[in-house]
Picture: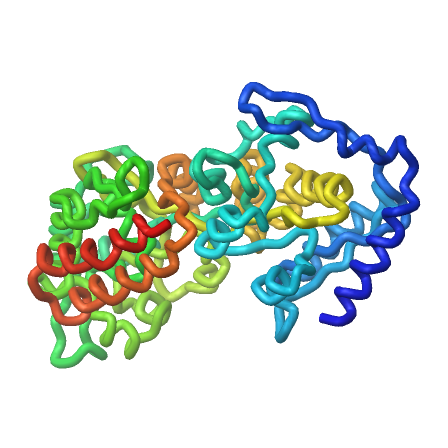
Length: 441
């Protein structure tokens, strides 16, 4: 942390020497919302901005390419790429008063940063520079919103699809799910019927087959809740609606798949069979997992598989959406320079360049990625379906204390997935615990 503090001290000293013309960034003009719109200031040369962003081995060269492209366009502004590890983490840096100028963070962490002002509200800059966000899938923008204001733009956006073993359908003589989202009749009744006909109850879980595997996390549960007309919060986010009929019916449907029909593994059985191995070995026919995981499935050659849409509920064919968001530090001392790099980082060209590892939230970048996959001959064949899946995605509303809500949901619903029980009682218990969190100031 001493290195970061020293860098900030040097930058603060350098700022004293700014000319009056460069100090124009302090000037403001009124907007219809009453917010201050920063006037365009000349970019300072010879400064360094910081980017905190994690990356796996495959993503590293892609980000480096984006940074190289930036260097050719803005050689006077360098970017120091920091990766989380040890004391170099967003929480510690914010607490120390030395936040990175830009950062990526998951949705749970983002809302708290937006509420505290540590993630800058971008609306004034978006209006000033007339940035058109129409290229983004609507739900992806919701990840970076809090109380109606845009505090970030998506680094990556993910949604659910059914990875489907078509060989199982063919061998069983069952019509597979339709190719297209909202196509031929494919509702909860048809989904349940297919899972029952495809499941095989063996002497043990090792020689059993499950028609479905939906236990990919709480986000996957919400896909069914949204399709049944459910919502997580009320309009002003002071209470949860988990105990209302649409969600109670959803939980009952999913719990019945596990414990009554036995067409979906329990969490314990799934853990024994393996998170993805259960599909790879042909022990689950339809697995609900994020589309961004596709590269992990492309090596499958022992059976025919493809993407298929989620079943439609009372409210239609809905989907879950989620991912990570890029934010700009509210306390950045290099705000104009950081904002300029932020625009570069989230531009169509940069998002397209990183698409193979950061599933793109931009329509144009997603299409470019899908076209490249088709040209390379990589599965799935039904890859274009993901466009409709992302268009129908719903992102849960942001709340600064959502992480606590998530813990309660994991505990109360997790018990139902593990052993069954009274669904309404579990939903009521969750509501009693969640509402005080939402209502706390």
